[in-house]
Length: 66
Image (cartoon, rainbow, N blue to C red; front, side, top):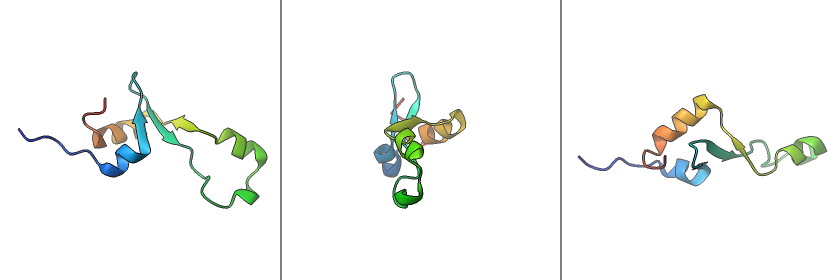
């Protein structure tokens, strides 16, 4: 049986924790930061945990990263 391929875009954007949760960068911080509130910018630092529905899709992209 040949090895399954990992999606390169997924391995660059997501990280799977030891407990199986999927972490991703916060969305909405690429441009247009002047119109964002200070509270939004503060709360959007770092990474966030994906919802279970989205995490299931991302895990299918990375078969060996579980």
